[in-house]
Length: 163
Image (tube, rainbow, N blue to C red; front, side, top):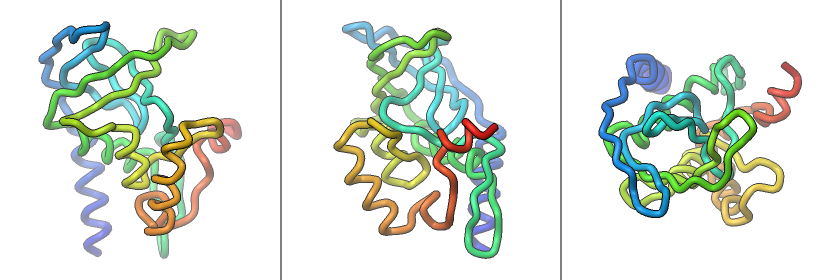
C-alpha cells in the first residue's frame, strides 16, 4: 500500500509541475536554468528541447508489470526525472541537434549527471550503442531491482517501434 501511495504522489507531482524560469546562458554554449520535464528523458531549458544523452526512458502509456499490478512506467519515469531536477537549476551541454531541432545534451544538476542518475534509480535504460560507462550503473540498478527493474517491461525503443 505504501508503494502505491508513493507512486500516486510521484504521478501527482508530475501532473502539477511548474517551470520557474531563471534562464542563464552559461559559457561555451551551455544552457542553464530551471527545466520543464516532458518525459523521463526529455526536458526544456531556456526554451530549448533537450534529450538526455545516453539514456532512453519509457513513454507515457507504456505499461510495465510489477508484482501484483500493472503501472504506466512512462508517467512514473517522468515523475522520477522531475524529482531529480525540479528544485534546482541544471546546466546542459549540447552535443548535437536532431532533425526536429531537439538537442542531445549532457545535463548536470548540483554536480551530478542527470542521465546517470536516471539509470541509477532504474527509471531509464542505456540504449544499444549507449555510453559504456552507463552499462555498469544499469547492471547495478537491475541487480537491486530499482525502478523499472522491479518487474518486467519492454525496452522503450522496442515498445515505441511496435506503436
